[in-house]
Length: 143
Image (cartoon, rainbow, N blue to C red; front, side, top):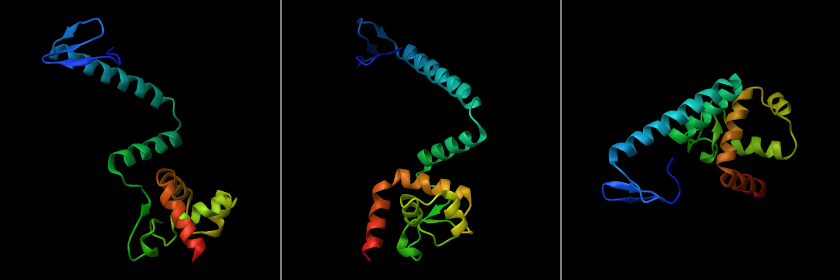
């Protein structure tokens, strides 16, 4: 395995021992490393529950697309604040309720158009956009 003090030099890679690997060997090493990592990921994936797999899938989808499932921002709705899709419920409102001690069950009871998946999506969005959500909470409390 290549280590942290490697340097690339012309046609090869110089390692700590002064060994130079050809480009073919480098590519083979990288492919073997990637395949090994994928095999390890597959083993770990098989140990996850369906819910954990769904959460992982959402995380991967966000990383790849920058989008958050179930959350949309439309300038004509709630001033463009991110809302739960098919509603006019801003994510910041749900986060503020959570901060004030409301349980997910209470939130779902008070907002019957929401489901548990909507809350998971909201919490994921909050996690990735903490400063934005805190700013929205502050702006709306000061209004």
